[in-house]
Amino acid sequence: MCGIVGYIGKKHRAQSVLLDGLRRLEYRGYDSAGIAFHDEKKVISCRAQGKVAKLEQKVLKTEKEGVVGIAHTRWATHGKPSVRNAHPHRAGKIHLVHNGIIENYSLLKKELEKKGHVFTSDTDTEVIAHLIEQENKKYDFEHAVIRAAAKLQGAYGIVVMHADEPQKLIALRESSPLVLGIGKEAFILASDASAIVSYTKRVVYIDDGEMVVLTPHEYHVENMERIKQNKSEEILQWDEKQAQKEGYAHFMLKEIHDQPHSIADAMRGRIDVAHGTVKLGGLASVSDRLRDIKRVIFVSCGTSYNAGLVGEYMFEEFSGIPTEVEYASEFRYRTPIVDENTAVIAISQSGETADTLAAVREAKSQGALTLGIVNAVGSTIARETDAGIYNHAGPEIGVASTKAFTSQLVILALFAVLLGRQRSLSLVRGKEILAELAKIPKQVEAILTQEKAIKKLAKKYAKYENFFYLGRKYNYPIAIEGALKIKEISYVHAESYPMGELKHGPIALIDKQFPSVVLAPKDSVYDKTLSGIEEIKARSGKVLVVTTEGAKEVKRHADDVIILPQTIEMLTPLLAVIPLQVFSYYVGVSRGLDVDQPRNLAKSVTVE
Ligand code: M6R
Image 1: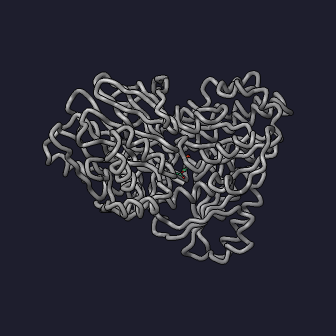
Image 2 (image 1 turned 90 degrees about the vertical axis):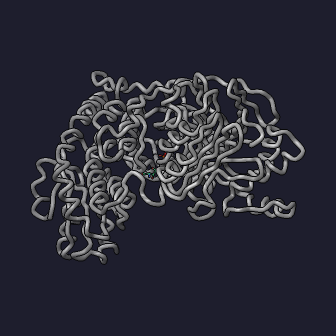
Image 3 (image 1 turned 60 degrees about the horizontal axis):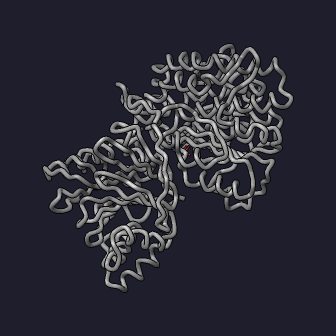
């Protein structure tokens, strides 16, 4: 969701550091942006509707710099995108940026209005600024912030500045991410490390219920009882280059092309083909518990949910453990029945998705073993689960998930083999899977050589407003992911179904204007999928088929074909999703859309 940044330092560079931070955090939300900094005389505040570039034009005109400041890029929850709703929000001398949702804001607002506070926005955030201002009438700045926080219900990462205290910055976290970067002559606070990494790799992760107080010279962290907390510093394992476009037109395209490497990185050092085994260091501490697991539940959202659906097929086939996949947003409200022999596995690129985090907490409170498959190192889900596996995909900036998804699939395949080998999966089968997995990076590279041809197909199909995405078994989740991708990037209506379901109703929609993208690799359900294609053709529907080498029959019925290299059935999703990502990308580009920052979306959904 929203991106927040704070800066305090010995040098006057608040404005430039904050703007740079906003540019890097823009993928979290981009409907408006704002900044406030103290030039040691007064607070200068600028807000703009739209992208950070618009704000930048306004800010540069001020020709001022500061030693302390706060900034924000917004993904609207309460109140339309507009200048009046953009952060920082102000109440008297209090200036504040917020990421999250204040659930009891309307009640608090009414109480504050009775006390004479006048509100100028439609946001929940403004309430926090007024609450602090109210408390600050009796208590000092720090104390006022703590007292205000005690009245809030909901999720918040906030950074607060006081017009009379230019030597101080305060931040607070409750269920919304906050990282402190420790530089040589400055501190930077942000909702994620991407705003920090170019200044310093030394970071402290702020936990729920903690407040950090910063001056240009030092910082300390307290809990809500004002007891100082000992926090350990960590070093970010990020290469700044990974978060740059490197000559590609968009992050999404760059990240699609990263996949031969990111897939290799997800398995690097983890497979022992000769012994048909897998080493997942992050699970070592729970290896005994894993042997006793009788049930697995994946909890996740969006693309990560789709990865879980592939994982369900893999786990049931190779480990024999009953497996379910739940939308994290539903799991917590469904009275889930789990016990100590259930592994609840959270899949999350960002490791900060509020729904997934809540599902983890719910599962933990009921005694389940909680595990994470997470890309963002040090993120909340990674820290709160009992154990886990990192994707090692590097930062994913494009809002549409691509390389994180394929790295999730690699980890799920490894995990299935690990659990299977602990149970009844044979050495021979284990070896075969791992040998095939090792070939995937080169096969993805080969698929990407078809980019031009897929681009041509995208141009041809870009005129349609409706699509079916169809697949069976392992590739049904890929149909769902393909449909999600084209919806996100191209604003095209796309529905996904298991091919077998088409004839039970949806086929009524098929006509010349309603094309279908069908996943039909030569696997155990190939013949059944062929029958489905014939049914579509019989109703004049256009069919774009993604199939594998040697699948001759399918070509006879398809209008267009994309050919994948051959692999074993469980790994076809890793190959089949690649052309669908490229296809969605180019449909979006053909339609002249901003594929890296699609409308209404944000990269990391940290509100419920
Ligand atoms: O960071 P997470 O993997 O937990 O995020 C989950 C979803 O919000 C995310 O996958 C979303 O669906 C993406 N926009 C997909 O492209």
